[in-house]
Image 1 (cartoon, rainbow, N blue to C red):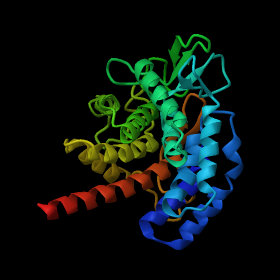
Image 2: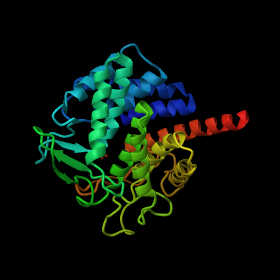
Image 3: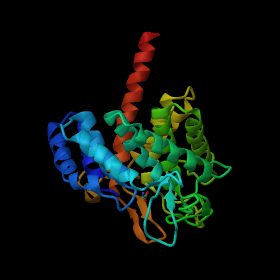
Length: 329
Ligand code: GLY
């Protein structure tokens, strides 16, 4: 699921610096993903193809980008069953039709595919997925479950549980960040207020949580049992910051941008941002892939870097807009 993040990081670094060598590197590694447009083995088409080709078509398009994004979306849609109204995330495990909160991130490619092709099928599936997730994935306090399993014939919820969190009822930190980002992005394409409100509710859960540390870099799970002696997850903070800069554009509340700025300040400190040439050349230290699987524990992760770069770009966009507004006044 992570193969789009290296080319995507190169695209974002190119956008931030204007360095043509970075665009060349981005294109080289984007094009290596070409065959994935026909992959149907899981829901991660959005992560893989939109973070790479989606950035490429925005910044330096090639004639084939559009068709590759449309094919990728068709592959993703092959995992949608109308009886359930959602895209199936995984084919492994004891579940019938598992859908994970992360899957919200894969909807962006579908919204774009409708713009590129004029075919509203992609848009409609994305909206159906967002609506069903909104209905079934969230708790009263605004937090989300990681996995919801559906009956593939009736669409009824069979169970709610976790795969990467501390427990079924806990709030896995990256899942909360995917929710904030996912619903903010859905609002961008649909302007449906309920999506904006869901993003705000998910943010409220995180920012008012007693286990959110002062530097705003969350522990890997908000309910992990040994807090404050648990690991932080910088990837969560980076995803959240990128989402909050966008959320701040849709709201008069100053808090979203202020929080994002504070998160970026922490991530840019020597506690999380590595020195050049160290940390295997990644930008950020201290992320967690999957704690229960003992996988990628307290390491740099490419998606932490990707969302950190996206947050930097969005911060720049917000600052430019704020400046132009103050000049107009
Ligand atoms: N989508 C996988 C993860 O967030 O770990």
